[in-house]
Length: 408
Ligand SMILES: *Cc1c(COP(=O)(O)O)cnc(C)c1O
Image (tube, rainbow, N blue to C red):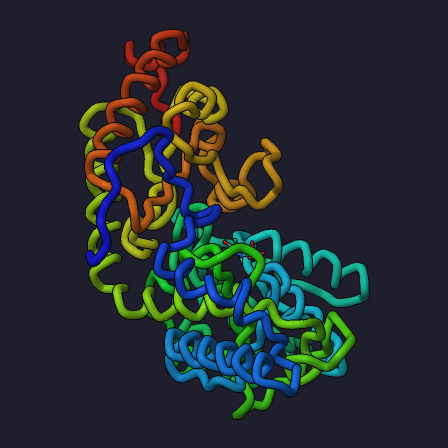
């Protein structure tokens, strides 16, 4: 890769599903827009024009990453949470006459599930599709769930805990046949794996800059403008920015950063994906060589190249996290419920055995991680798991051949 890898420093950041560091090239692109290029893109003078030009350049960079998207289909928001809210609530209001039914998946992010729960309190009905033990969706379940009242199908591209990738092309085809809007939460996949809104029949798509080495607090909602021309009610009313869909002065530095982040991600995706996959596989292999009774959660085939969600039987994830957190930053599930220690709704939906439910760690490898760091992590996690298991009477009993429940 074109940048210099930094020497190993502790703690090691391996929580790239929660957020990513801003790429130095992104920071550099943003720099002028905090100070000398201070214009409001809505202003009719040279400062405003230059800001508007920068915003439009970003729109083009983002549209390019989404393949088949046009610039006028890119709407800026504060992040994927807002994009998901706008997509679901905005469509619910405009398409309610269709009968008020929407379909989503049990393993979606809270920024979709909680919006669905809210919509249920407003009289809408929601089907939460189950997944199998590997986190995969059954397309026949989807087809069976569709009724003539269904106005929207919302399925994430890749899961933020287990990294499972859903078959968007097939889902899009089903949605198109039934003339149902198709929304995709692509916060985890955008910039990591290829996306194609045109080929896959996506009508609405959410992404977030801080998940792809851009700044926090800026995101995009892609809204199809042609076949069909999707119409959404806005959440925010005001100056009529973004064609009335999202009022409020545009976050110019953030938008410039998101544009640059998309450009870099698009250009370097094949190479970067090879690098992070190699590190992920090195980590998985190293841990499996050293430790018995560890289990990868989610589909081993169709998953994000940088994701490894792994259960260490007989070791509570909270104890393991506590024991390693001075040197390694990972998480036991998603960071998206604000640090709460609730059990993962994703692992529950996969119906993993209880011994695996409370013993999972999610590793998220990133652009700037190195093989040296991964080797340190293998070493540290191995030592810690062995130490914690040495204090576990259950593990000892299992070693003597007693307990094989759910550990195959
Ligand atoms: C991070 C994330 C979000 C929320 O994005 P924000 O920009 O932080 O609001 C939504 N969905 C998924 C799948 C995510 O990973």
